[in-house]
Length: 229
Image (cartoon, rainbow, N blue to C red):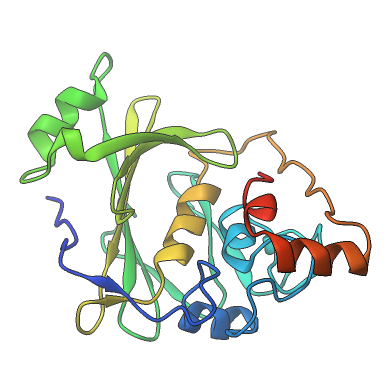
């Protein structure tokens, strides 16, 4: 079906400790909405989530092993991605070319599968199918499983080309104009694979190594930890 693009009129919902997880996301992960680095491993909470590690477990615990996240594998199209354990997944059509991953708040992630004829460039597909969207508003990205794609600069839409297919991920707001789960959506895009892959998440280096160093780093500089990945 035709794509319905998310609004550009929105604000992020509160993030009390400025760790790139909203307070509602912290509640879901069981992390401390008043602590920049809940597990004290030197990585701030939001950085851990988008890099697919558990913000509530000392490095290096992968997010998929936390019990808070599930991996969805499309029974028809074989793509896979992470989503929050309490959210519900349902196909819109019998072929599963469109699915919705819904939060209890009414927010939802929409995933579309499009067939693209051989030799179709992403640019030509975009010009025809992305009505009202601007190509200049996109930037290239490569996710944690080394899958390349395009991302709308506000982080609300991702496009992932694959052989003869194109996957589109969109975030739709629930109530009002606040975005409570932007980082969970980024987590889904970072974990997306068009099919099974041998690529493994790189090990998370444990930094720093002692409690004294951790306290020193966190009290003297946020840049030191922010530039680790």
